Length: 249
Picture 1: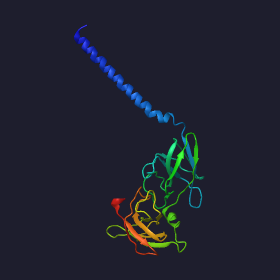
Picture 2: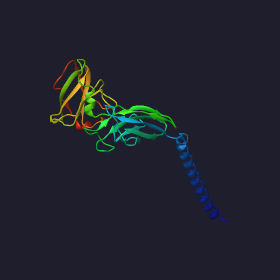
Picture 3: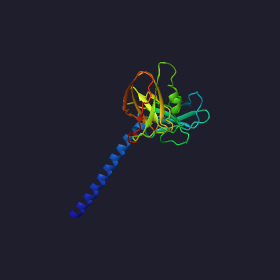
Picture 4: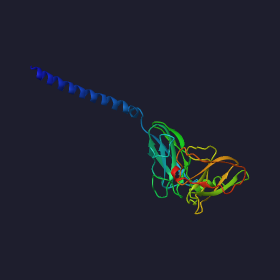
């Protein structure tokens, strides 16, 4: 056998061996990547009802499930749309999740909420077991209904009013005011107003104390939003104007 032939034979052999090694390593990586799914078992089921503040079933609402506390992004899992009985169900792998319920009048699944849309508020942390089921009901409400929850019912609450304006001083319609004990909040602030009218006017009902205030248009607010106005309230307060900054939305 000639030297040139042996050399060519060796090159082809080594090339084939290297190719087999790469394929073998790829198979090992794929196998170990699938191990969590192989041992996860059957998906668990999250189910329940979506209700309004009168505890009546809500039709065409959905539950959005996330694998992290950040719920201001596309959901990892979405339930069926509820029918007349308000019932929903969604299959998800075992693990820890955060869930919210949303009703949109338009029927869309994404985007900011409109004036008639409803939200369940802060996300709910839950754990799903393999091959098991978890029952959980959600109550959804729009901004006006959420604001009415804190409406002035006694002398323990004070009334804060003002306008939401842009940087030019023009009233902003369909915005809302927020108040929170800390400058930064997670999913939702402690207190929230209804949507503003054409004059940009809002009303907040708060216990006396120190709060951070801000204003937004899109609902719900983005996660970890920072409020800019720091103010102490001891009684009913008027003309607390809030500047809406489009850049920070």
